[in-house]
Image 1: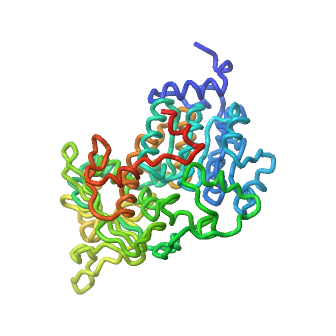
Image 2: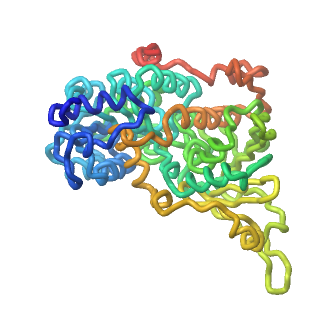
Image 3: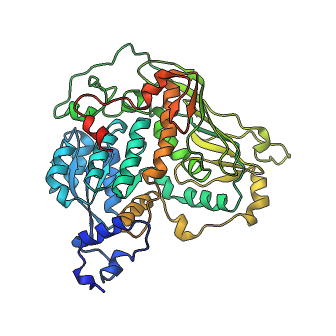
Length: 471
């Protein structure tokens, strides 16, 4: 037996990645160390690409695990307010505007990479990091196109690195509850899910009329070519960067791309929905060729799976664009009447065989509606322990770090989060084109719209092709 003192941190991490799925003792046990703060030699060294507000928060969350250290940061606009806060907090950490230079210069020091850029710039950095054998934590949605998600899943299989998408509720109480209730048959025979994001203050441009891209003077220090990454080149504008990029088809995913992975993730996973066979743009309000509609209603049709019946997901976004919930599911008033169901700004209603479930997003748990039905069945509901329910937002980062160390399995790896994001990708195409789109789940092609097929996997702009050829 090899003595623990001869096992280096790098060797341990390499062995952990190679033996994914095999039980491995935690590092502090395998290496013969006592509990408490880990020594520097055992920390997961990570770099961050995209250190704006989201990236800065993610860096803090990773460091809060006590098992990581930050070795380099990258952002196309280092002089912007939020990146400057990160730089001030970590003044000795090297800074870069080009992630390729950062990975080239510090690759030997890096075990994992955090990627928290805008959605359109996830793919290239993630592919390069994975090709170098680095574990990756990538913000949601995984990638802006169906084809990019497909390549990321293939690269995950090829490299065997740990991957995690940043839908942090997937390490929260809703994850453990949904898993337990599905396995126990409490959630069963689901035929319809209504999901929504009924506010548009985050997507401030939706519904505005644009005949061309707006233009503003480029701020000092912003490397716009690097910011655009492999997406189509568009002019800089304050209506795009730093806050409103999610509105634009060429670089954003709208409300569905932003919130879908937080709202339908557990249903998609534990109901084994996979890819839809039909996507219908039921309604689009404020259609424009550049930005997402002011409001959208979509219908996704999923076929029967294993012993589960066909299922429909109805998606609603836009201010006041909410599903109608039958009054029979409202709570009882003292007079014995049912109150109308008042919906939160985001959430889902899951219509099962015998029970109806209501939830919001992220880690929030489901409750059975109406309330009197919840009370009736409460004692028979499976419970999930405190150790499981403790997982809130920081738990997703801790799960990722422990997976990098070989001590846990990542809960939202690309093999799980990739197909979820592909559902969102297909919905975004329907939002853009309208009508009814029939999709062949095996060939992964639309069968009735050639234009829609060109949007599944559009080529990158010149100079960014290499990342598409890695798998």
